[in-house]
Amino acid sequence: MNSVESESIVIRISGDSGDGMQLTGMQFTDTAAFLGQDLNTFPDYPSEIRAPAGTVAGVSGFQVHFGSKEIFTPGDQYDVLVAMNAAALKVDFPKLKMGGILIANTSGFDAKNLKLANYTTGTNPLEDNSLDNYIIYKVEVSKLNNEVLSGTGLGTKERERCKNMFVLGILFWMFNKPLDYTLNFIKEKFGKNQDMADANIKSLQAGWNFGENTEIFTTRFRISSAKLPTGNYRNISGNHATAIGLLAASEKARLPLFLGSYPITPASDILHELSKYKANGVLTFQAEDEISGICSAIGASYAGNLAVTTTSGPGFSLKTEALGLAAMLEIPLVVINVQRGGPSTGLPTKTEQSDLLMAMYGRHGESPLPVLAASSPSDCFDAAYEACRIAVEHMTPVILLSDGYIANGSEPWRFPTEDRLREINAGFLTKPHSEAEGLLPYKRNEKLARSWIKPGTKGLEHRIGGLEKQNDTGNVSHDPQNHELMTQLRAEKIQKIADYIPLAQVDTGSENAGVVVLSWGSTYGTIKTTVLELAEEGYDVANIHLRHINPFPKNLGELLRNFKKVLIPEINSGQLIQLIRAKYLIPATGFNKIQGLPFTTRELKDKIIKTLNDK
Figure 1 (cartoon, rainbow, N blue to C red):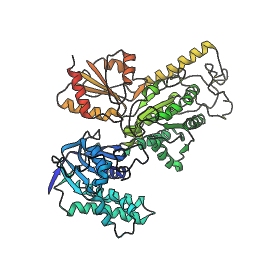
Figure 2 (cartoon, rainbow, N blue to C red):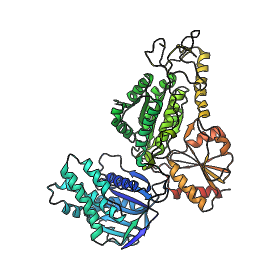
Figure 3 (cartoon, helix red, strand yellow):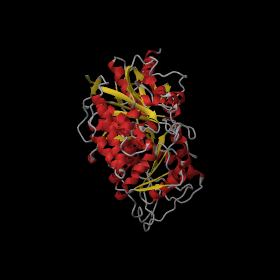
Figure 4 (cartoon, helix red, strand yellow):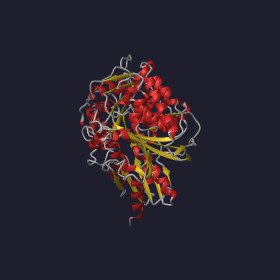
């Protein structure tokens, strides 16, 4: 038996969408995080509620990259692939590293499963020597698990549901991880169903014992803890981090938190998470549609709450008319769009960055709004917090863009201490501005923000609504000159936010490198990894990542002009590049992927090197 120390490992657990692959992956991930290893995950599953079992359309995969070094991506290729059936092997085998480990559930490679996976009649990849360049462990997972649970009194289907725990036990043994965390999870999850709890525990322990006693495995792996900054960490997904960021902003601003939303993939988890905090005063409202969701949030903001609404692509378009109302009212509102592949219902479980231009311009009239984007699962906390700060202090709706890749992905997150969080100064007008002027609800401060007035405050009665407002007084006005003035003031207010956000800076590399990679959103981790590796190989490359897209940081144009070439990779057809070219007249080069999948480091390396070498 070999014992190998590895710096990092990529595992892909793949099977039918009813096999519990996501649960298995999350349990492995949580245990790795508990042991202090850095990690990044990529849940990848079909959008169909139940695609035909055993087919390639129904394959659900969970990928985790973990190790003792800093990790920013789920990895391009797998060191270990667990294939629960023939379809899973067919879908995911192309990304298994040459010489990598394949653990195959032979029960999923019978004639029926091979046919469903579209293998030629008489062909079985586990028996035709086509996998000779790989380390293959053939395990009768379904059969062995069924035998383990034969005396439990459970039916066939119930026993079958536990086979993922058998596989998880094998992986825990192979990578020297304790069972304790998952044992506690099972006891808690099945607290009201002791039979299922006992069965899952038996399967988990049986898988571990199988690795320990059968001696078919030739190697066990040891991965040390990562050297991360000291602090308290937890494993967190992007949607969970977004919810906690909203909670932190609510506490810091001393405002009650209200979320009005209509469930939609992949944003629903934010609503689910915040609904757990009712005892802490958080109000969540599951509306009957997207329009009701945002309108309820507008009403809550008007009443003095920190108001939020969440959605994804198709839902975002339904909110746009009400978003214009919020812009006219000039009240705080955070709109979170967890992007997915489009148009229409498109690719509900696949990622894309294709709502940027809609966030920038997708409203009637001229109503520019602040636009921010989160860059990683843990960054969703900071991005949500920053969106709330801008909304409250600048009296404006704010659009925060996340996407399916980081919303469902997870990584270790260090708890921030309160003193690290920027102040959020929320205040309400309590009396007229002066005896001489009386109440001027649209009178502006140095940020061009108007006052926030709670309805029902004595002496501060004023008009609201979607009709154009007279400057200062807020009275309804159709005066042409006033409309032009108010349009300009609303736009100037958004641009003035640039005075209150950080300057852009180079993330990795020097300020005059041959190529700078400019990015936004979830491409950050892959781009940072790529640039770091290329720099170590001697290439002259740097990267800048944007959180604030409207307005841009004040120094962005000047900073970009220091570089010989600007490359902008995006998971769309090229949307940020349009904004950069239009504003700064910089001849940037685009690099685009529109497959519902994130970039790989290999793809980016090839493009950056080509850009460096182009004349």
